[in-house]
Image (cartoon, rainbow, N blue to C red; front, side, top):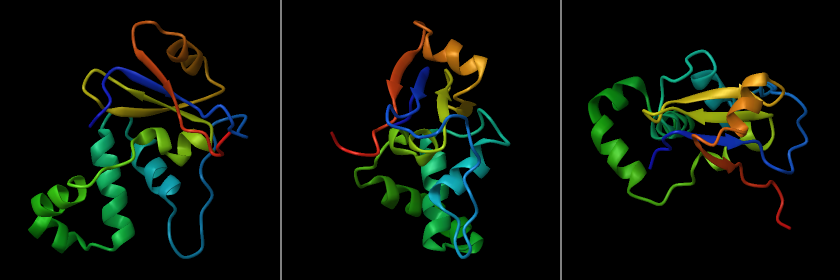
Length: 137
């Protein structure tokens, strides 16, 4: 499932005040880092599914050769199970980034302090939703 013409606002319980680059870790890149490094430099290039699959490939250690040889099977296997959507992304939950999906389902990051964020979050012409809360209430 990919979002189309949708804006995901930051989580209502985020502690972020501005869009922040996720911090680096010592040994492995976090999901937030991988998502940020995919989306930020190339806005409106990837769909939700492409981002999620890329994160999965990196986190499971699949090599480029394995990916090239088995991409279709890996894709099918990955999406054969129920999958959390981008409303659970740490970028929108913890790091102050709104997620805007265009008419083709391609995603861009929008910092919560920006004028574009204000425009998109108030636009009646696109579907509005929020990132999931970090804590249950």
